[in-house]
Image: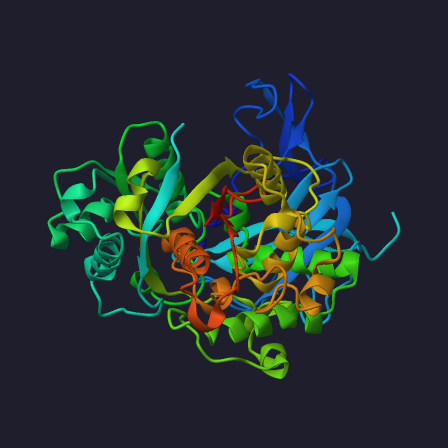
Length: 140
Length: 379
């Protein structure tokens, strides 16, 4: 009996990749026309209408702008879970699940960093991964 | 541009009516508004219908039982602003001379969707990683609390006020007052919100008849005049954004005050889009009823309650009257028409001459909200 390797399923395709040291990177778009960085990468820049969008690794650290612990979740989502807005160091704001004990969440403006983890299990029983953020534990 | 008057207004009690057909939710409001205007169906030249979840041909389905067919029916979808968008389009159609008498209907039946939180926007990446509508407002609330020192107890006072007003409104889904303790202890939905910081889901329909100014006297001795009806969409911002400021509402308010010459101090009664408790406070500020960060002081002073100088959500608002999404804008307008005619019973804002309705909604990544409608009416 062979075990087939199951490709991880990501909530947002094309947003997670790895650097040379196999650390997770969060991918966004950088506009060739005006330099705007956007997550996720758009097909067209909403500001200058350039369709030349480069893949760019976004900052992996930022600050916790706000969050909520969600108890009334949509069907198929395990609750409670924490959802946040994180302001990345390169000027991008990102909506992301917040890692950690939902009963003891960190205060706003806490420095946070990127991890990749399980978001939920989808209707096919497959684990769905996504970017998440957790409070920074060690100095860089 | 011709002057336009509201000459008929009607709605049923908002509530949960899973056994009622969509059409049977709608036609009584339509008939009520036409009766109220002293007209017959043959006088209505077009219908503008706002609905967010009603599906295709919502207007035709609600009009069919009344035999109101064979006229143009324009269906409008703009999330929570659907009904107000329909009203705005009807107003412009008459003002520009396309029609003389038009009916506006707002209708939605949320019990068709089952229970729980509303489905998220399709293809929205924030929804795909777990954002829900209550969580979006909850994040606004948490940031506002962080920046302005608002406490959860103070936030809860919004719900207490809403339910106090709703208890005076026979058309409200909830007509029972609640205590501060009950709001604080209600089961959590999206922290810091508990159940009573969130509007209920429900079913409802509201209708209005509008006519060219010169025809108003044929219908009523108390026409309500439309001073202006503003509609705008949210600006797409990809970077940092201050979510404690209601961008779309602030901009919309600035535009309509300029267009009508009415100032926030002139408004005697207002219905604002309090889908969640924090929203009412943010909108006091965005609509210019108080300065940034001072919304709770305004609430606490009693200014926005029955008997205050700027009573807000005398109907109970979305928190107590209920929020059948696409019907809400029309229901707010019906309430303000009744207020300006002096027909609002126990919740009447005494001597109100200028009224404002504000409706905004639709979660969409990168925008404050999808749509925002603000209307100013005068007696």
